Amino acid sequence: RIIEGDARDVLARMIEPAGLHRLIVFFPDPWPKAKHHKRRLVNGDFAALAASRLTPDGQLLLATDWEHYAVAMLAVLDAERALENLAGVGRFATRSEERPITRFEARGAALGHAVWDLAYGRRAATETR
Image (cartoon, rainbow, N blue to C red):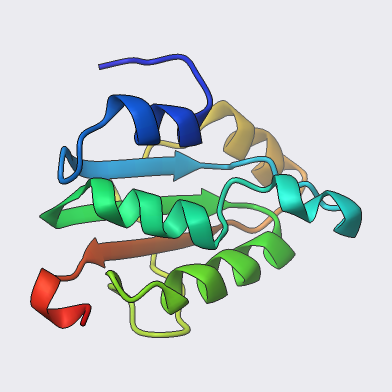
């Protein structure tokens, strides 16, 4: 399915709880200025919402080429009790062979930008208590 819209609104209003097996977020806007960090997609509210929309065996996969945002995403997602970091707490995932190289990523690679991948699984309900 393809839906055009704000990811937060789509998840909250159009996707039922436990309705997604996989949620993929490639290169969200890092909003690099500190005064704009509140606009970032990946925050505590998003982490909880995303986790609630994943099936019990669902995955949340992310990638960014902005190191500071990668570190912030890692901290936020590791703190969400309903998610388990598949690479281990505080660790970034290795790039999955099935993750396509986006046009944005290719441009960044040409400029020498590194990419940080994150992979999370939905914990069973009994593990989140």
